[in-house]
Image (cartoon, rainbow, N blue to C red; front, side, top):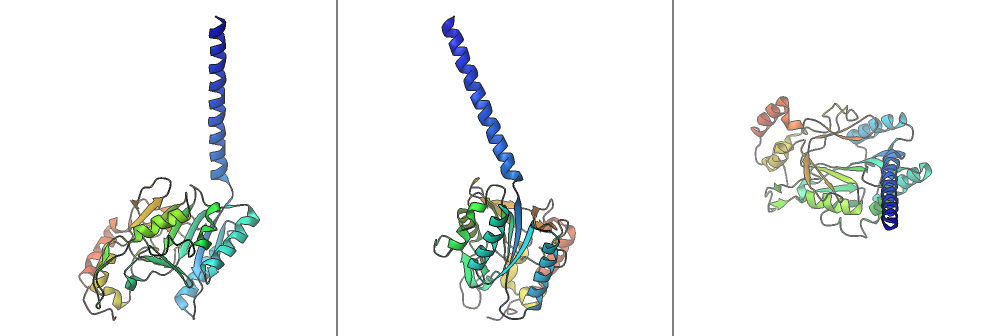
Amino acid sequence: MKSLLIILIIMLGLSFHLTAQSDNNTENSIVNSSQHRINFYVVNKPKTFDLFSKLVIVRARKKGMTRGDKFIVIVARSAEEVKTKMLDYLDKKGAMIGSLWFDTHGRYANGYSSFILGQDEFSYKTIHDSTKTKNLRAIAPYCDEYTQVAIGSCYGGATYEKPAHAGKPASRMNGDSLMMGMADVLPGATIYGTEGWVMTKPGIFCKHSYALAGYPLQKRFKDEVYKPVWEHMGVWHSYSSLTKKFETVNTLALTRMGTIRVKSVTYLDKEKSKRRLERNLGKLKPGLLKS
């Protein structure tokens, strides 16, 4: 009887310990998710006067000015400058990163996905180079499973093959490799990248808007070499080092606070978008894009 009582006491103690541990884990999870977070919108500083880029910066800063210390716009010439400015804000507030959007150009002509911070280009070719990614890795301690990072460059998550053009052979864009590499640089964070264009029309900081989807109007983008991009407008992917899953998600949007949101309906599922796509695909021609 005595032995049975001892066993019962031990079992009750173990149960209490496991319950307490579970409660502690739950409490830690709540603390982590509710910890003060800052959303960042990172823009490349134009080398020369660029009206379009200036308007994007003005719109972003206008939003940031009214959001206190919760939404910060950073204009930088390099990845090092991005790192320095971000760490300054994060350390002062004892904060973690909520959403981080890199507003940067992609270079379709290169035949691979990339995003650019000043002179620093990141692609599947460089994202695993610790020397080139050291400034990005410096912000990794401020990322966790509640952090969302968007490679906001056109074709940043493209997985299709860019057709041969102007003497250059066809090439796979490898945006998935870039995203997976970025997830290794910022462990825990969810990384987003798109197959198509990233537009910055008025209304980009509105979760109900599709201002980040769509297409450019210049004639050169009607060259048939861009056909894969037209067919993948508004298609985004996500990847996290925690889940190890590369998934297709709906078109992204940004809220007025700079928070990344996945929309309930993707861009090309809208009937209006489908009709526009059909018309534009019919207008594609060779020779519109000069080499």
